[in-house]
Image (tube, rainbow, N blue to C red; front, side, top):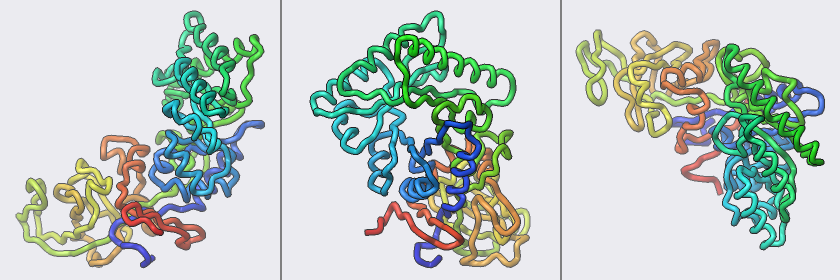
Amino acid sequence: MNDFLKRTWAEIDLDAIRHNFRTIEDSLSPGSRAMAVVKADAYGHGAGYVSRALQEAGASWFGVSNLDEAMQIRNAGIVEPILILAYTPPEEAARLAAFSVSQAVLTQEYAVRLSEEAVKAGVRVRIHVKIDTGMSRVGLLYQDASADDGAVDAVERIVRLPGLEAEGIFTHFASADEDGEDGDGFTRRQFTLFMDVLEKLERRGIRFPLRHCCNSAGVLRYPEMHLDMVRPGIILYGLAPDAWMGGMLPLKPAMELKTVISMVKTVPSGAKVSYGRRFTAERPTRLATVPIGYADGYARCLSNRADMLVNGCRARVVGRVCMDQCMLDVTDIPDAREGMTVTVFGRDGGVLLPVEEFAGLSGTIHYETICLIGKRVPRIFLSEGRTVGRLNYIVPER
């Protein structure tokens, strides 16, 4: 692996991605399919390579957050349908149609404007209508069956607008990953509300080809809610939505973050380390400097708290994390030396340092951790143990 700048890098196991998708598909209720959610650069993994691997594994739908992301994976060779799950300016109707991208409709007013732009451009835009059953983020409000019948009327008006093709209808679970009766009860209430909308629409002669509501947690916990399609995200990348859900499927984490020792030196007892002098050596201490910092997504709040793996041994980060570098205490790892690979999270031999630990010490969730791995960290794509691709955001390959 000497064909990239060996400073700090993320290794992405495409075999794990394909394994996870097939494992998810095999777990689905009969008649359902999986939309591979690859928004946010495939959760920081690299959308182009990951999407192609998923398409090879059989993915028949892809979910993204915006039109640029849809174009990104189209340009990477994705030919299957793509759904934009969030907002696109209605003025982009022609591009949505030209690149065969479906659009979420969040309000009746938005649908009217999208319809007008589609008619003006002489195109038809495929849409999925979003129903808000409890997330209170986007979508037509239907959180109270006795009070929100206006949503059903709005859907009926939307599907009759010219220039639009009503392809799907969906909602999003707010608490499917919460352990305990409260979260479970709220999820079941959301599903009941969603099915109520569908039943009322069917009585008016309206049925959508694709009905979907399950996110990753829904996929794992609620097979009776899989309907026509599910939207796995975090589980595609081998991570459980929450720690208590680990092991529900035999998933394989796809990303490992690595760096390298740039120098090793011994400082005397009493020496201060890094900005603000927040660490004091209590003995003669061997320090290994590694070229990763908060500009790479390694949060400053990990100072004096987190470990990395050096030759299969834990080494504590000491002193404040800098923008580009930080220091490790390798006093008890005598073979630590310049040029040695260091695992920030992932596996080193038989020792695992999970990304969930990294995220917990940062005071956040692993979703955010992997999405925030910086763009100066190249992604190195592996298959069958070999490097099959590289993604360098700073110096793109031509």
